[in-house]
Image (cartoon, helix red, strand yellow):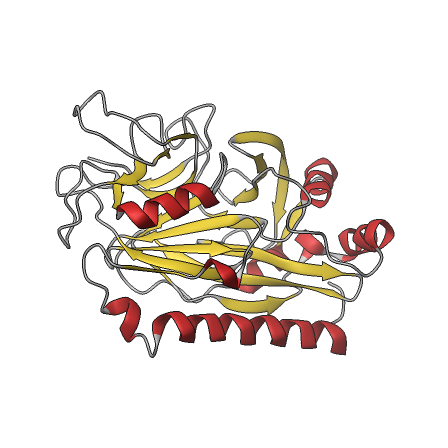
Length: 322
């Protein structure tokens, strides 16, 4: 791990302060977001005008959170699957987008459809009665869905969870951005951070302790994978989300969140888990080549097996739909 410098600590402090300011502006002591009525939302894209998007859906809160470059830019009420048609929780990517779509199974319109599984789970405009009412999809208000549809692309990561923790900024979380990666950034870019718009591809990385593998996804495709060496393998990695905020030879900062399939409080994101992960050279090189602001890294203790994914999409489902 690269030693923390005054510069990297100042960078981490700035990111944390910015994240907290966003949270206060959106939530106003936690009351504004909690008080949203069915169909209501907040949308402040000017906080991060450009860059990759990540989405978190909270089933117990019936809320959807939109992050761009790791900053919260929108929160909306939503409606997930009703009993018997539960919305699956897990890690997904947007596989297909259509402004107008009709469900072949239920013969209903699905405007602003963003498909998450080939079995029919999607984000789209739908009824919002204030409780779970869908056949498994995530229903959104029309005006909010229009904005989200314009902001996402094929490959945008979507986390559907029973609970998740609030984001916190962390510095130098381990070997994923260890000395070799930082030296490569320095040699290519000097002291400048990679641009959020350097590539139009949505890039995310998933580390599975069950598989002992690291998977690199660009858009909806797996573009690289390799062995992961995990120290203290008997201790779970847990379900964590890390969104890269930038870095150079002086240091690196990530925004971290924990998530959980059950509707209890998510564990505080454990930044130490990345210090336990080392990847094979080919997969580490693939990560470094694609690293940019907003790149998301997810850790899970579930396998990426035929039971939890369906080609060509990459889906880690930890609570299958009924």
